[in-house]
Image 1 (cartoon, rainbow, N blue to C red):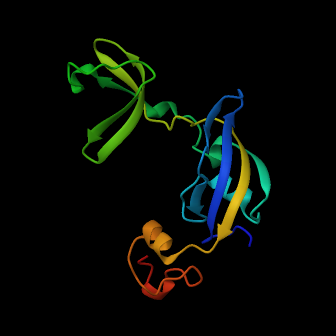
Image 2: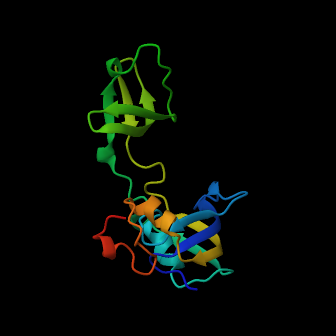
Length: 170
């Protein structure tokens, strides 16, 4: 069975940067996802379509097909007074804060008595990504996997019909 949209895929992978630094890899358990569900970056999904279980794939993914280009407009100064006074804040640390729209994540770039320079870019924005991938499994997803990913709970959804039978609810 070939990888295509609405197929469950399990891979082992190693992700490195141009520098050779390994930033992520599977260890004991393959990483599983449903192709076409937006669960992985577009370049990875496109690079493995048409492959089968047992295939080994090496991909180089440009920033535009990964986490986007680094955007300077996403680096903001936040008044230090917006943080609790006893909070330890250091450059390089990831931080999560509450906003009116919900939780937001950023990386601390710099800290002064007056402000915290916060980078709201994804940590891998602007990076070319290198994947070494081994396709472990390709199959139709279960109804439970489809429901978990797409929501709903329609008992008539199948990997073949997708969610069209219930109006897109799952």
